[in-house]
Length: 80
Image (cartoon, rainbow, N blue to C red; front, top):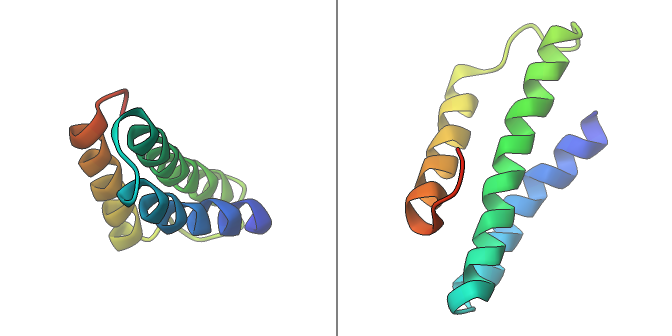
């Protein structure tokens, strides 16, 4: 799980950077990847909590990830 979380976590800023230099559908594609990676981070952390690997999902981290998801939802649309 930790390896998957690291990959998802790193994917967010990398896709934001790639998307910021693109236009149209290509930009939305990268921003969609960033949004998906933020969703994946939440799911991994919730799974880690449910499995007893972590005591709780840190509220400030969950709030920041949800803010990222909402921002991209507003930029490109799609499911939350």
